[in-house]
Image 1 (cartoon, rainbow, N blue to C red):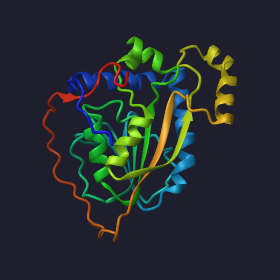
Image 2: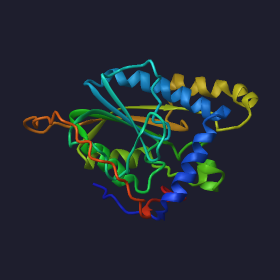
Image 3: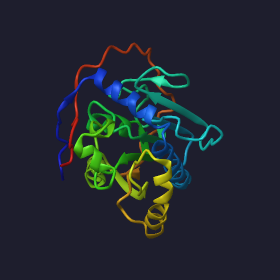
Image 4: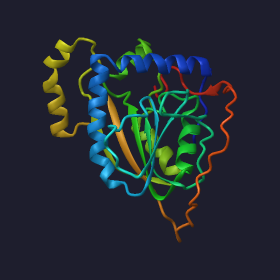
Length: 256
Protein backbone atom coordinates (compact mmCIF):
# COMPACT_ATOMS: atom_id res chain seq x y z
CA UNK A 1 0.00 0.00 0.00
CA UNK A 2 1.09 3.56 -0.63
CA UNK A 3 2.12 5.65 2.35
CA UNK A 4 0.87 9.16 2.92
CA UNK A 5 3.79 11.40 2.04
CA UNK A 6 4.39 14.96 3.20
CA UNK A 7 4.44 17.66 0.56
CA UNK A 8 5.70 21.19 0.20
CA UNK A 9 4.45 23.97 2.42
CA UNK A 10 2.03 26.84 1.94
CA UNK A 11 1.10 29.46 4.50
CA UNK A 12 -2.39 29.97 5.87
CA UNK A 13 -2.49 33.51 4.46
CA UNK A 14 -1.67 32.26 0.95
CA UNK A 15 -4.22 29.47 1.26
CA UNK A 16 -7.01 31.86 2.29
CA UNK A 17 -6.09 34.22 -0.55
CA UNK A 18 -6.23 31.31 -2.98
CA UNK A 19 -9.58 30.17 -1.58
CA UNK A 20 -11.14 33.64 -1.90
CA UNK A 21 -9.91 33.97 -5.48
CA UNK A 22 -11.43 30.60 -6.38
CA UNK A 23 -14.74 31.49 -4.70
CA UNK A 24 -14.91 34.72 -6.72
CA UNK A 25 -14.30 32.63 -9.84
CA UNK A 26 -17.38 30.51 -9.00
CA UNK A 27 -19.55 33.42 -10.17
CA UNK A 28 -18.06 33.16 -13.68
CA UNK A 29 -19.48 31.04 -16.51
CA UNK A 30 -17.15 28.05 -15.94
CA UNK A 31 -17.66 28.38 -12.17
CA UNK A 32 -21.41 28.12 -12.54
CA UNK A 33 -20.96 25.21 -14.94
CA UNK A 34 -18.86 23.44 -12.29
CA UNK A 35 -21.34 24.02 -9.45
CA UNK A 36 -24.31 22.94 -11.55
CA UNK A 37 -22.61 19.70 -12.58
CA UNK A 38 -21.45 18.96 -9.03
CA UNK A 39 -24.90 19.58 -7.56
CA UNK A 40 -26.30 17.08 -10.06
CA UNK A 41 -23.65 14.54 -9.04
CA UNK A 42 -24.36 15.10 -5.36
CA UNK A 43 -28.10 14.66 -5.84
CA UNK A 44 -27.39 11.35 -7.60
CA UNK A 45 -25.18 9.81 -4.91
CA UNK A 46 -26.58 11.22 -1.65
CA UNK A 47 -29.64 8.90 -1.63
CA UNK A 48 -27.15 6.08 -1.02
CA UNK A 49 -26.15 7.72 2.30
CA UNK A 50 -28.23 7.09 5.40
CA UNK A 51 -28.41 8.73 8.81
CA UNK A 52 -29.18 12.06 10.43
CA UNK A 53 -25.87 13.96 10.64
CA UNK A 54 -24.21 15.51 7.58
CA UNK A 55 -21.31 17.98 7.32
CA UNK A 56 -20.07 19.88 4.27
CA UNK A 57 -16.62 21.47 4.04
CA UNK A 58 -14.47 22.98 1.32
CA UNK A 59 -14.62 25.40 -1.59
CA UNK A 60 -18.40 25.75 -1.47
CA UNK A 61 -19.67 24.24 1.81
CA UNK A 62 -23.16 25.44 0.85
CA UNK A 63 -23.15 23.07 -2.17
CA UNK A 64 -26.47 21.48 -1.26
CA UNK A 65 -29.49 23.50 -2.33
CA UNK A 66 -31.04 25.38 0.65
CA UNK A 67 -34.30 23.43 0.38
CA UNK A 68 -32.58 20.06 -0.08
CA UNK A 69 -32.73 18.54 3.42
CA UNK A 70 -31.33 15.06 2.99
CA UNK A 71 -30.59 14.62 6.69
CA UNK A 72 -32.07 16.09 9.85
CA UNK A 73 -28.87 17.73 11.13
CA UNK A 74 -26.72 19.58 8.62
CA UNK A 75 -23.61 21.71 9.24
CA UNK A 76 -21.38 23.85 7.03
CA UNK A 77 -17.72 24.05 8.06
CA UNK A 78 -15.28 26.62 6.70
CA UNK A 79 -11.70 27.78 7.14
CA UNK A 80 -12.83 31.36 7.67
CA UNK A 81 -15.75 32.99 9.43
CA UNK A 82 -18.72 33.32 7.08
CA UNK A 83 -22.47 33.67 7.68
CA UNK A 84 -24.10 30.29 8.19
CA UNK A 85 -20.82 28.41 8.63
CA UNK A 86 -18.72 27.18 11.54
CA UNK A 87 -15.06 28.22 11.35
CA UNK A 88 -12.72 25.32 12.09
CA UNK A 89 -9.12 24.24 11.66
CA UNK A 90 -8.73 21.58 9.01
CA UNK A 91 -6.78 19.44 11.50
CA UNK A 92 -9.19 19.92 14.42
CA UNK A 93 -12.89 19.38 13.80
CA UNK A 94 -15.34 19.86 16.71
CA UNK A 95 -16.96 16.43 16.39
CA UNK A 96 -16.57 13.26 18.41
CA UNK A 97 -15.02 10.27 16.61
CA UNK A 98 -17.53 8.30 14.54
CA UNK A 99 -20.34 10.78 15.24
CA UNK A 100 -21.27 11.72 11.65
CA UNK A 101 -23.14 9.76 9.01
CA UNK A 102 -21.85 11.63 5.96
CA UNK A 103 -19.05 14.13 5.33
CA UNK A 104 -18.86 16.04 2.03
CA UNK A 105 -15.45 17.43 1.09
CA UNK A 106 -16.09 19.85 -1.75
CA UNK A 107 -12.57 20.38 -3.14
CA UNK A 108 -11.40 20.49 0.45
CA UNK A 109 -8.27 18.52 -0.46
CA UNK A 110 -7.53 20.99 -3.26
CA UNK A 111 -7.58 23.89 -0.78
CA UNK A 112 -5.81 22.65 2.33
CA UNK A 113 -2.56 23.01 4.20
CA UNK A 114 -2.18 19.22 4.16
CA UNK A 115 -4.62 17.05 2.13
CA UNK A 116 -3.60 13.93 4.05
CA UNK A 117 -4.25 15.57 7.43
CA UNK A 118 -7.63 16.93 6.35
CA UNK A 119 -8.71 13.57 4.94
CA UNK A 120 -7.67 11.80 8.12
CA UNK A 121 -9.59 14.30 10.29
CA UNK A 122 -12.73 14.00 8.18
CA UNK A 123 -12.54 10.20 8.10
CA UNK A 124 -12.24 9.93 11.88
CA UNK A 125 -15.55 11.75 12.28
CA UNK A 126 -17.42 9.23 10.08
CA UNK A 127 -19.11 6.30 11.80
CA UNK A 128 -18.68 2.71 10.69
CA UNK A 129 -20.90 2.26 7.63
CA UNK A 130 -20.97 6.03 7.05
CA UNK A 131 -19.82 7.81 3.91
CA UNK A 132 -17.26 10.28 2.65
CA UNK A 133 -18.31 12.17 -0.48
CA UNK A 134 -15.26 13.82 -2.05
CA UNK A 135 -15.12 16.26 -4.96
CA UNK A 136 -11.73 16.96 -6.52
CA UNK A 137 -10.22 18.53 -9.61
CA UNK A 138 -8.93 15.94 -12.06
CA UNK A 139 -5.34 16.63 -13.17
CA UNK A 140 -5.81 14.16 -16.04
CA UNK A 141 -8.25 16.42 -17.89
CA UNK A 142 -8.41 19.72 -19.74
CA UNK A 143 -8.67 21.38 -16.32
CA UNK A 144 -5.23 20.04 -15.49
CA UNK A 145 -3.60 22.08 -18.28
CA UNK A 146 -3.81 25.49 -16.53
CA UNK A 147 -2.82 23.74 -13.30
CA UNK A 148 0.44 22.42 -14.70
CA UNK A 149 1.11 25.66 -16.57
CA UNK A 150 0.63 27.66 -13.36
CA UNK A 151 -2.21 29.76 -14.76
CA UNK A 152 -4.63 31.63 -12.43
CA UNK A 153 -5.68 30.01 -9.16
CA UNK A 154 -5.84 26.62 -10.89
CA UNK A 155 -2.04 26.67 -11.02
CA UNK A 156 -1.82 26.86 -7.22
CA UNK A 157 -4.67 24.59 -6.15
CA UNK A 158 -3.75 21.04 -5.24
CA UNK A 159 -4.89 18.43 -7.73
CA UNK A 160 -5.00 14.91 -6.25
CA UNK A 161 -5.41 12.08 -8.75
CA UNK A 162 -8.49 9.93 -8.05
CA UNK A 163 -6.37 6.78 -8.08
CA UNK A 164 -4.05 8.21 -5.43
CA UNK A 165 -7.05 9.33 -3.37
CA UNK A 166 -8.52 5.82 -3.52
CA UNK A 167 -5.25 4.50 -2.07
CA UNK A 168 -5.41 7.02 0.77
CA UNK A 169 -9.00 6.03 1.51
CA UNK A 170 -8.08 2.36 1.62
CA UNK A 171 -5.40 3.13 4.21
CA UNK A 172 -8.05 4.85 6.32
CA UNK A 173 -10.49 1.93 6.14
CA UNK A 174 -12.78 3.18 3.36
CA UNK A 175 -13.86 1.51 0.13
CA UNK A 176 -14.87 3.52 -2.93
CA UNK A 177 -18.42 2.58 -3.92
CA UNK A 178 -19.00 4.94 -6.81
CA UNK A 179 -17.22 7.45 -9.02
CA UNK A 180 -18.78 10.16 -11.18
CA UNK A 181 -17.03 12.57 -13.55
CA UNK A 182 -18.21 15.87 -14.99
CA UNK A 183 -17.23 19.12 -16.73
CA UNK A 184 -15.61 17.63 -19.83
CA UNK A 185 -15.43 21.10 -21.37
CA UNK A 186 -12.33 23.16 -20.51
CA UNK A 187 -12.82 26.05 -18.02
CA UNK A 188 -13.19 28.73 -20.68
CA UNK A 189 -14.41 32.15 -19.54
CA UNK A 190 -16.48 32.66 -22.70
CA UNK A 191 -20.13 31.54 -22.29
CA UNK A 192 -20.41 31.38 -26.09
CA UNK A 193 -17.56 28.89 -26.40
CA UNK A 194 -18.89 26.84 -23.52
CA UNK A 195 -22.18 26.61 -25.36
CA UNK A 196 -20.44 25.58 -28.60
CA UNK A 197 -18.66 22.79 -26.77
CA UNK A 198 -21.78 21.45 -25.07
CA UNK A 199 -21.60 18.35 -27.32
CA UNK A 200 -18.37 17.40 -25.53
CA UNK A 201 -20.27 17.39 -22.25
CA UNK A 202 -23.04 15.20 -23.64
CA UNK A 203 -20.54 12.75 -25.12
CA UNK A 204 -18.65 12.41 -21.84
CA UNK A 205 -21.80 11.90 -19.80
CA UNK A 206 -23.33 9.39 -22.19
CA UNK A 207 -20.20 7.23 -22.36
CA UNK A 208 -19.21 7.72 -18.70
CA UNK A 209 -15.73 8.85 -19.70
CA UNK A 210 -13.15 9.34 -16.89
CA UNK A 211 -11.61 12.59 -18.18
CA UNK A 212 -13.95 15.14 -16.61
CA UNK A 213 -12.64 18.32 -15.00
CA UNK A 214 -13.86 17.09 -11.63
CA UNK A 215 -14.46 13.70 -10.07
CA UNK A 216 -16.85 12.70 -7.30
CA UNK A 217 -15.93 9.70 -5.14
CA UNK A 218 -18.38 8.08 -2.73
CA UNK A 219 -16.52 6.00 -0.16
CA UNK A 220 -17.94 3.98 2.73
CA UNK A 221 -16.21 3.27 6.02
CA UNK A 222 -15.81 -0.46 6.37
CA UNK A 223 -17.22 -2.33 9.36
CA UNK A 224 -14.82 -4.94 10.71
CA UNK A 225 -16.16 -7.27 13.38
CA UNK A 226 -18.69 -5.86 15.81
CA UNK A 227 -20.05 -2.38 15.28
CA UNK A 228 -18.49 0.13 17.69
CA UNK A 229 -20.93 1.82 20.04
CA UNK A 230 -21.91 5.13 18.55
CA UNK A 231 -21.29 8.25 20.58
CA UNK A 232 -24.54 10.17 20.67
CA UNK A 233 -23.22 13.49 21.90
CA UNK A 234 -21.29 15.77 19.59
CA UNK A 235 -18.39 17.61 21.11
CA UNK A 236 -18.47 21.33 20.41
CA UNK A 237 -15.62 22.80 22.47
CA UNK A 238 -15.06 26.52 22.62
CA UNK A 239 -13.55 27.35 19.27
CA UNK A 240 -10.52 29.48 20.06
CA UNK A 241 -8.65 29.04 16.83
CA UNK A 242 -5.03 30.26 16.82
CA UNK A 243 -3.51 31.13 13.45
CA UNK A 244 -2.48 28.00 11.61
CA UNK A 245 1.22 27.49 11.13
CA UNK A 246 2.54 26.76 7.68
CA UNK A 247 1.33 23.33 6.70
CA UNK A 248 2.38 20.92 4.03
CA UNK A 249 0.96 20.50 0.56
CA UNK A 250 2.01 20.77 -3.06
CA UNK A 251 1.48 24.23 -4.46
CA UNK A 252 2.40 23.10 -7.99
CA UNK A 253 2.21 19.86 -9.92
CA UNK A 254 1.33 17.67 -6.92
CA UNK A 255 0.87 14.56 -8.96
CA UNK A 256 3.23 15.11 -11.82
